[in-house]
Each structure stands twice: as structure tokens, then as C-alpha cells.
Length: 190
Length: 266
Image 1 (cartoon, rainbow over the protein chains, first blue to last red):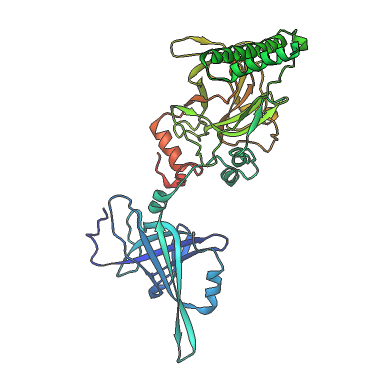
Image 2: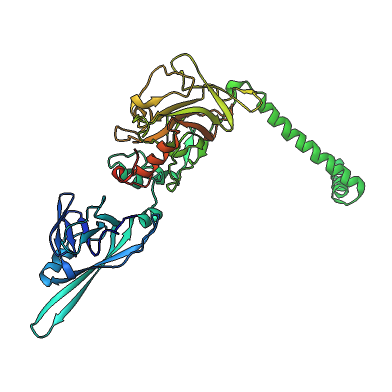
């Protein structure tokens, strides 16, 4: 349990890390300044970033979470859609800062891990401004926690060629299983 | 009236007697039928009395067997000790259809033990063939692979499979270095599974699997005309609970696939 009795006021910020395969690792936060965690700089999005609330539990529980980024120019939407966002690993941390100085509180483990999962789906919404003839978009990423992924995971390999080559691409040992199920062997025939 | 007319009269009255429905007529009909059957039977017996070289022997047509392969079977994971029936994943005939080669996939090869960082080792204990314990040759060129006899639960010895079956076990891959002998036996020589199994090449690697390549020799006299049902006693030296849980949590093939750095294992 974190002891915050010594502080009159604190500020919290959320840091989000999205590892998009084949593209880049996106790091952003709703903090007002760039902030470095484990040698990686998180870009401040401030009010443009919002995340759904989570509940604190003593043990790991499964759950979903949504991350919304607003104010994205239309030119960046294609870049977003062209990459494999779905399935990207997501890590969210919560940092505690002094409201007076903006410095991170000297608490072991700060910032704390809040959520780990993957992007299971995403939504792109467009807001069109008729006055200045511009449009901005909002991207919402639905994230599924690792806990839920594990509970739904089906591991192991079945005795067929497709499963075997999924793990060992050049192995042909089980390529004949399907054909064997329908074939007869004339054992002992002259 | 000539004597010919008399003969015709006798024949005619005999025919009338036989075709009538009287009791005596039926008795005669039965006797004639029995005599006919007896003559046919004696002709057949005469043919069977011919010397062997004069008889036409029918060649053994063999049997039509179907390998019980199922693409939806899942390869099990064993920690400690377990009895498993192998799943047939390949079969092929060789040597003029007389030898049937069958691949029984038994279990997954497990990973490294957390406790001592050593690779887990899987061995084969007893092997049951149609619910009888197999006893292998302990000497000679087929030591540890060729079946000498089987024993039932009451230790009654059954020699019907003697010399007709050979079981080659592999743990980890189809390479010669991964061939193992059942516990209590030693191998006279090793060879890659793909050099034994017909139609296999070096691309048949059976990575991270424990499996058995069996050779069954067709023999109608001793009743080896169907693929025997095998059960294997699988022993994994990964037995500590922590090792097993850690392996299952981290393995990306059959486990949860959790990254080791995400597990506090100190």
C-alpha cells in the first residue's frame, strides 16, 4: 500500500506504451511534460488523451480498457490504418507527482504498472468543422488485458501438418496425418 | 408285345412310383439325394488327397488396415510420470507390404528446469502392447528395440510377437543422437528416425516431440494382422512443482507463453 500521508496534494498522470509490430513503439501520456520511464521518453498529449477507469484489486483480474486519442489530423489517419494496430502490446503506467513541483514522488516503484494487454479493436471517428473546412479524428483503442488473453488462450499443437509447421516451418513429419485418416493399407498383400 | 414294351412298362411304372407322394416314394427320393451328395463329396475329397505339389494354393491376400490417425489429437505434456497411448501420425508399408511402419507421437518435449537450469529429460519406462508388458531383446544387434515376448498381468508369457515387432524411441527430435532405449535396456546402435521410416527425409524432424517408430511384421499364423495398441510409461525428470509451473507458464508452444522477465522466480 502506498503511503501518501506526507503529501498535501498530488498529481497523477498516465503513461501509455503501444508496441505496433513493424511500425514503431508509441509512447504518450496525459502529463504536461515529456517524461522518461526506463530510458524511454513519453510524449505529452495532455487533454487529448483519455483512458477509461479501472478498479484496483488485490489480485490480477481480467478486464478491458479503452484509450482515446483526440485531435489527430486526417493526414495521420492513413498512417494509423496502414499498420497492424490490432494485436499490438499495450502497457499503461500511472505516475504520482507532486502537485506543487511537478516532480515524481520518491516512492519505490513509481510510476506503477496499471494495465498490460493488447489492442483487440479500434475505432476511428471524424469530427468535421464546417467553419474552417477542416476535420480532426479521434482514435479509440479497445484493449484486452493479458489476464483475459491467458484465460482464452488455447495452447499446444494438434497432430496435423498445419500445427506442426506453425511451430517448425520446415518439418514435414505430420503432413500425412489427414490423408492417413481416409486411406487403407494392404498389409501383407503379395 | 416285345420285351422292349415290357421294359418301357417297368420304367414307366417306376417313374410313376417316384413322382407319387406316397411314403415309400419319399423314402426312395431321400435315398437317391443322399447318394448324389455322397458322390459329390467323395469327388472333392479325392481332389484334396492330391499331393501338395498338385494342389492350387491360394496366396495370403493380407489384410486391409486403417491407421487410426486423427488430425485433431493434441500432443500431451507430461511432468513426472504418466501412462499415455501414442497417437498415430504416420504409417507406411515396406518390404513387399510385409512390414508396416507406424509412427506413434507420445508427448511434448518439455523445457529447462528452473531449479538447476538443466534440460528436462524424458524417458520411456514400460511399454504395453495390447495391455501386455513388452520385454525387449537385451543382447544382439536389435537390443532394446526388438520384442522378445510379452507378459500379461499374471506374468503369463506370450511369444506370439517374438521378433515381429521393433520399437525405436526418440526424445526431442528424429536425429540419431536423440534415439533412446526403454529403461533397463541399451541400444546396440542408433540411427535417425528418417533413415528408418519409409519415405521420410531429413525434413521429417519431429522437433520437440517424444515419439516411437514401430516396425510390425505381418504374420497371420501368430495373429499379427492389425496394428497393435500401444501404451507407454512416460517419465519426465521435471518433477518439482516450481519447475513444472514455471515451464508451463513460460512455454510458448504448449504453455501460457508468459515472458520470463514478467515472473518473479527468485
